[in-house]
Length: 80
Image 1 (spheres, one colour):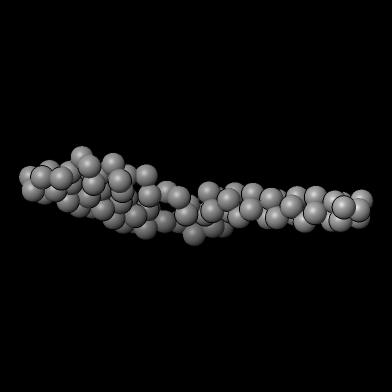
Image 2 (cartoon, one colour; image 1 turned 60 degrees about the horizontal axis):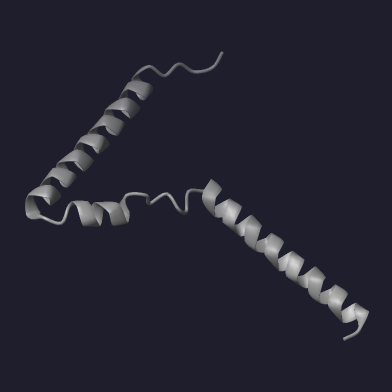
């Protein structure tokens, strides 16, 4: 193979590797991989009672977040 072909192949593979790295970093930054508990919960909560407990915990979490946002709106002060 000629030198030019090898240099072209190295350049293209480096470019594609960098593109893949940028896509991975973008995915991590935007939270594409944040479903941490999906598979763990599937194994942990496989009984009916455990599923009810999981739903109850999820509802409590949502209520806490809603309450926190309501307090934030209640204490809102416009900038000067």
